[in-house]
Length: 502
Image 1 (cartoon, rainbow, N blue to C red):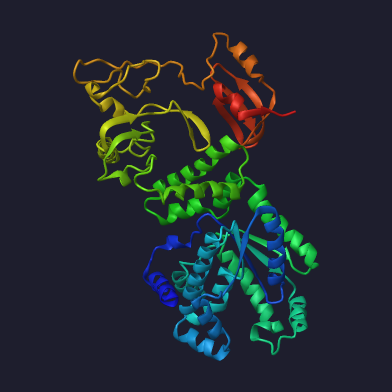
Image 2: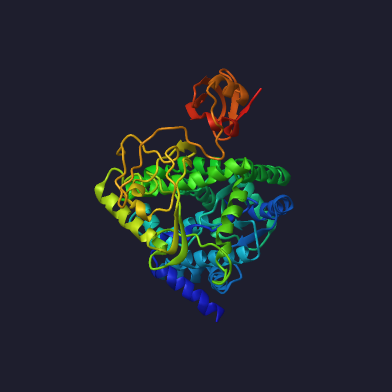
């Protein structure tokens, strides 16, 4: 029964073109690669012990595993002649089976509550040791064909490449004295393998790679690996890692070149980055493992029963066909709802307006609409303007007390909102925005600035931008010079975002 279930998983991958299956949910995957004799297994055991003592439970994967599919692969691997015959007939078998074997192992690790996974060999080795089976006219064609069969392979968070001299690796293999040497254990073959493996790593430039000198003593190698993993995953902030990775792999350029809906995809990326920054604003410096733990809480409501006392959070699209006694709709602000593109495109605006109608009609008894006066967007605090849709709602349907100081519209809005019923008007009025978290500015701006404790020339630190110098201050904003340019922020938020640095 178990074998049939796993075979079913294989068949799903064979015929499923959903490339998104290669992302790992809420867990770090460290993949060790390198020549035979580089010390991968030895170091994995040592590194796992250190990481478990410091960061919690880990999970070790050595492909192929003891799953039903893994056992099939081990059987085939045991006979080199038989294995080559199978590869010639079915070049897809190994990449697909090894992908599913890894998926099963990751699922087991998640169930066991592992914080991270360490594996010996992975995507790099799978490519290299199986690519020749495709026998295409070019290396690129072989790679492209194999890529189709590896869409289920989880991409590791980082690859640790055990870089060792071929002669030293060969000595270690001979010292093991495990019987006749395999072709891949011969010096000339190892030289070729090392060169090509490193070439392949450039092909996998979407994955961070750390080279570790494996010629050193076991203790020093372990310490170096721990340092690399620590630097990547536990020392640097989550926002830094994500920003660096996106920049390193030139993902934005890739999206622009390969997708018609690139603008929307890039907006999603920015929202993802913003979600990390928002959390860092609350808790301070945020590690990648901490962020992943926080994200994992998103699925904590999956098992809630319908009758439980809780609020359902969903997108407007997901709410289609559903109704609720009370509905809260947030983010009724221009450039959010309607979105930025809709503000410039009438067709997009009409689609957003229809979507707004869907949202409004989900409520059976009460409907609450809200907008923020200041919103944290793409790493910055910005003043926001109420959605244009708000002024299209008949006033007779609204249950509010009109407050001019809270409901103001930008210059491109009309001076009045035409309404039904008694035809009252919302007047456009630019005033200071008052929220419960706002520091109310005195008439004497200097007094306010003095109370904040900042002056021109002060050295200050920002959680994201680092050290900077205050260049100027006016009645509403404070301007700080950083290495990458001058940043401005609302004066009322300066004490929350900046700290003095001596």
